[in-house]
Image 1 (cartoon, rainbow over the protein chains, first blue to last red):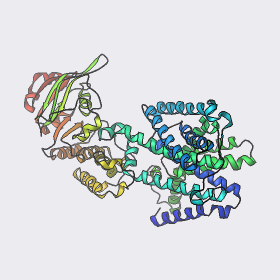
Image 2 (tube, rainbow over the protein chains, first blue to last red):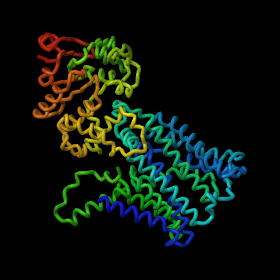
Image 3 (cartoon, each protein chain N blue to C red):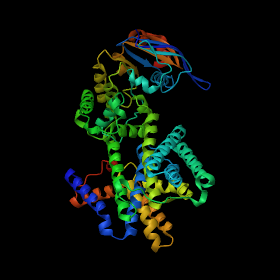
Image 4 (cartoon, one colour):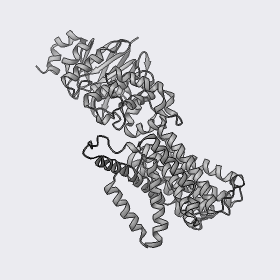
Length: 331
Length: 245
């Protein structure tokens, strides 16, 4: 894609995102757009570890819930948003640091199992430590914050607030992916031993990536809390981690658009399709199987690959055999 | 001051002694060839010098500094670079990006999450220069997975040289190369200035012999013969263990 075309696509996408409440109008669907955006933030955060560090975490629901619960409990105890939000961010990043120290002793399946266990500990606390967390009943939050006097109570205003945070997240991801640190992290994914010999501190690269992932997971968790004005143990459960993992993998790991597309699919399935099809989980399952069968690299890189082969075929005969693997778009 | 001094170095994997009391002393600027049959412990010796493996006992000094216990990544920062026998490069990246990663490894810039790596012109220029040095400047933007085995060998060497090491360890730089490629790589190695001390493992004595000042013959983890080219080649023990004649 040429630079001009790319710029046009970005402007168009921004325009579409900025006008969602206008052309969607129905608050129900505006809310779904908000959900897509904060789940996309969560998926992008998880993608830092899965896609760029090559570390598959199944404990991120714990971090997501940590942010929601910290803020929720502080608000329920009568503290203001100005305290609850930073406290939730700090507590979650600190928890992410503990997760990282414990789980980075391993990679691969070992890393996955340790993060899974740590996530389940947090779920256990949310579910069982009823005197602290109110157990199964969850925590209610009375109001959404009103930054600079701008009330977020309505669907549209909450959507715009979420959009701003989402764009900040996207910019930070873009910077990260292009940066020397991002390149170093991808290096530790592909050739950790080599990176060590080249002078990189592989462990520290991964640790910092985990913290970066933790910051945006916490942000997504906060948006989730304020969106629902409620948090319960259900969201801390393994299912949330698995769903986020599916968003990343189905959309395309190590891409920026993949996790967003994955989040959109899951949220739409859950909210829209479930209104028409009772067994929406089955539909979701079929979609995932189809994606993995036909585009094992994920939806976004897969579509790029198809578009490219289609373009070459359209130009007729001159199509070269694809020398480059379809990973380019993702990197 | 010696460039590399190994003292009573031992390494055992369980009951298997792969390095036995190796004493080795390499002078600055020297070209040392380490030969030995398969399983002689040559690569294991390299892995201990670069820190990929911890020795069971003994010590390693590089330019007078004891590095026996320091981490592998820190050894890169004090001027040790190596190439690998089994090529471990970044297949999805371009040649230029591969060399840039090598340069970045020694630069504080590697922690920077804000700037665009592609716009770090000084890094790009240095990486291009390193590729030019090994004759790959014209395919710098090609993806590594689209290059030949011989070209990858040269990328390995470019990455090591880009780090401007004081001590360069080459693990079978000629392995798997065609006759033409061997000649190219040999010319390349011969052109490395004497500020760089080179230790090279090589099976194929014919190609490597005239690059070496001194030769060490390893067998079952032990130094059997050490000396100048002529001394080692003439030594009956060399014929016995290595040349098999």
